[in-house]
Amino acid sequence: MARREWMARIAPLLSHRRFLVVIVVLLALWVSAPSFILRYAVLSPAASGQMVQWETLVLLFLPLPGIVATIHGGLTGKRLWSFLLGTTPYSPLLFLGLPKAILPVAIGVPMGLMGAGVALFRHGDISKAAGFALVGGAIAAWILIVSRIID
Image 1 (cartoon, rainbow, N blue to C red):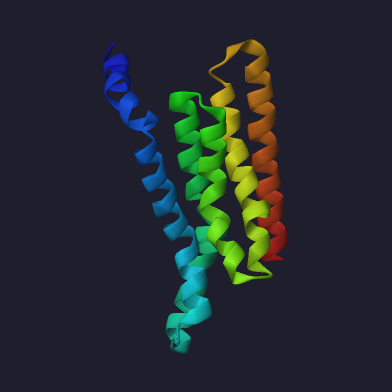
Image 2 (image 1 turned 180 degrees about the vertical axis):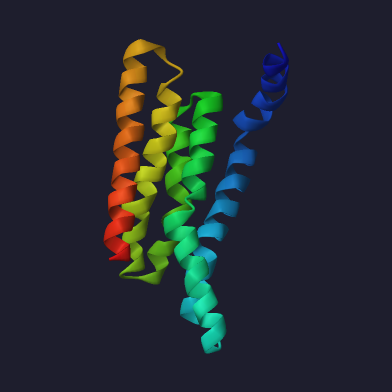
């Protein structure tokens, strides 16, 4: 009973479009800030090394847009918004040119598919199978991409 009360309180906030826009902007700032700082700021070698570590953490090992998209998809069941919530925060990296312009597709799409897959869990038995396939495929793709980038 307590879960239903909690969901009743948070559901209007999650479905509000302004809330989603603010979340996407904050996630885009989280994802792209280290890359833009490394590209345009003059840093000392020590600070540059720390920024590279932060960029590696943000882009590869802590996929916060995917985590947020997964939570949103599980709570609301909205597939498109969950996909966009996982994919869109990587779009500012397009302005950095190659090789960073590939990341919105290589990492952003699996993050969005995780959110859409979890959203499918809320829609019947066949959708649960499709959701498991999407989430499993997205996690496998993310692991393969991260392992190729690290090598």
